[in-house]
Image 1 (spheres, rainbow, N blue to C red):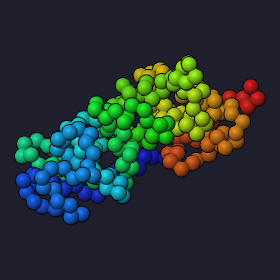
Image 2 (spheres, rainbow, N blue to C red; image 1 turned 120 degrees about the vertical axis):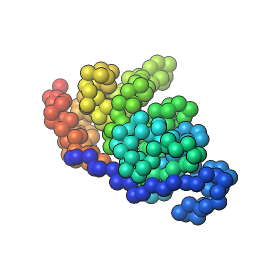
Image 3 (cartoon, rainbow, N blue to C red; image 1 turned 180 degrees about the vertical axis):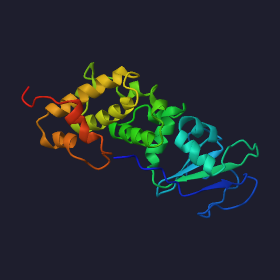
Image 4 (tube, rainbow, N blue to C red; image 1 turned 60 degrees about the horizontal axis):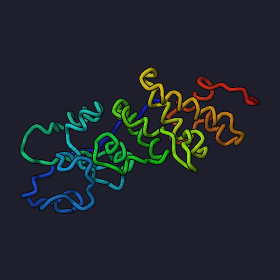
Length: 238
């Protein structure tokens, strides 16, 4: 199934803080940052307004342009370059995206966001889906080893495929698959993680998790159907 083309509704330019002009929701933008805004890059000149709840993420135009050519194209369409040196703060709406996934994605790339150090497997999955949509996967090659690192419990370290439950293993398996899909030789550790995670799921006796490898599921994006059939065909009774 092809990836849907991002469809931001609109972008606007926010006045300098010395001007008293409300935004579309009537929140005054004078005297600094709205309380609901979260910084990815402090004092950034771009606010991403994400999801139906319109979460506001502060970043810079340059940071977004560097990490995503898709978003760079959207900024260009709206004539947002960040090069005017006027102190203006721009806004870009991404109404069809998940705000937490966007926050975790950009927070993982840029330092100073410790909440991204220990993302749950489902959150890692959501980040990778967001990154795939906006063609950001290469930006996560440095942080990916942390996602699939062994976890410490009961006085020893456990590989992820033995540490997590089946649902978490499924999320990590799909994330690993998408991470090395475009360049399988770049991240051999991810191929190994995918191998062990998928082997556990295929061999598991729970029919629900085996079915998730064969049938389309919500948020499956099509490729998951092929993982069991094409990549890991294991005998059922071995």
